[in-house]
Length: 186
Image (cartoon, rainbow, N blue to C red; front, top):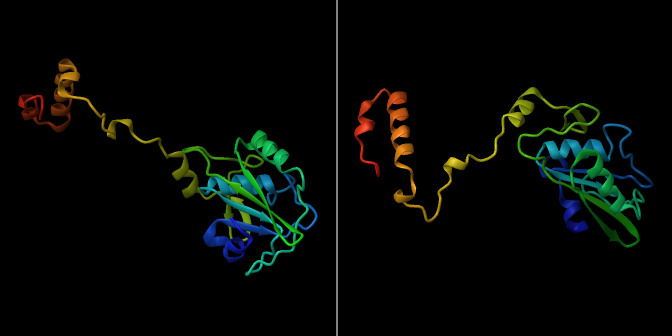
């Protein structure tokens, strides 16, 4: 991502948060810290925390010394503390440094917490996740393996006893004994 691309992004639409952070930025001392934003963005399918650009649109470069020379350590610390593997990228406009922190999405069905609170972004703040979002995340599931086709399989590969049991169960469930008389390949 380039600085020119970053300048065109809008926080609410593009899953990005801009902070001036001219000299430093909090790692975990409050919700509005690297860890707080990591948790909130990961809970909301990922995003970017950008240090060194002004919040106001279009985002002018002010430069940041936050985590200067410690980008790799920052990645290690965030992974240690959250299990999220962020990626950092340093960009320059002249001598002004911009730190871009790319935050991936959380695992399917798993919530992330900051100080025992599942966070999400609301306007300019980081708030406790809404009940609706919380429930939708914990109800997520891995894809159903039974909906996938097995390439190269034929009817000869299937167990006739298992097919018979499946037809019996389906006939009972549908209250339709006609399923029992279907040919195996139907």
